[in-house]
Structure formats: C-alpha cells, structure tokens
Length: 193
Image 1: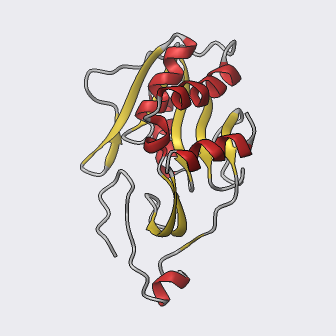
Image 2: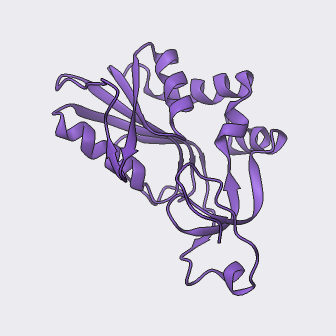
C-alpha cells in the first residue's frame, strides 16, 4: 500500500484534519491524523493492519502491546492478524504501566504498535516496560509516522504512512501568535488552548 493510497483512506473517512491542534506530545500542528476515524471502517482497519502484520509476520512475534488509548484498536487487529496475544499499557497517575492482569514473560518477543508517532514518547515508555520484564522488543510499528523516519525507536521499525508534518513548540507556533483557536483531539487530557 502506497502513501497516496493510505492518505486517500484518511481523507475519505475524514480522518485527516486541518486547523490548529495540540498534539499528544504537547507540540502544535496545523494538521491532525485522527486514526480512530479511519480505523472505525472494517475494510480500512483490515487493510491497514494487514500491511503492518505482513511486515512482521515470520519474525517470531509472540505478543503485541500498544499504548492506550490510540494504539489499542490497531494493536489488537495487528495481533489478531498475526495470531498472537495482544495487550496494552496505560497511564495511571501519569505513568505508563501494564495493568489489568496483563503479563509479559521474559521469553516473549514483543511488537510495540501505535497509531501515530510524532516524538515517540509513549512508545518509548512502553518499550521500557517491555525491557523491564526481560522480554525482547522485536520491533515498533505505527500507522502514521509524522517524523518522516527521524524518530527511531527500534532496529526494526515500520510505519504504513511516513511523512513529515510540521509541528512547533507552543512558544514557536505561528498559529498561536495569530490567536487561531486550538483543539486537542488526542487521547491524553489536554485542555483547549
């Protein structure tokens, strides 16, 4: 699947938004990928996750883990298509943790799956959780890599859609200087601007 085919899915489902957004990373951007809107369509979910699963099939993956909440749907479908256990990590009191009785055995080969990577902060936290169990991080996958490949989190890393999307610190943001209203549609609680 090409970048243009993937972008067409985002555009046709209304999942590529234009405006002024506060990203989960805290950075500001004039565009936002709302993966949940594209992944709500079974045909798109199957196709997108099939590309990711296909990339890692045959790598001995035993578990897929995703950071909550954005990565859960894509991680679960990737795990289903590979045929392995799928779990997620979530924040408790601001700290990424593995809860709900989920466990990772040191013998497991774990694929970390996220919906969108900008700075890779949440994925990096999940990687540290996996390493703390003694398990092997076998790779990192995402639907969208907004850094155009600049954020490297694992030796084996794959993103279906890789492109550079401009983002700024709040202090550098030209849209803030123009007083354009800001929206924070991400999964972490970010008050509007």
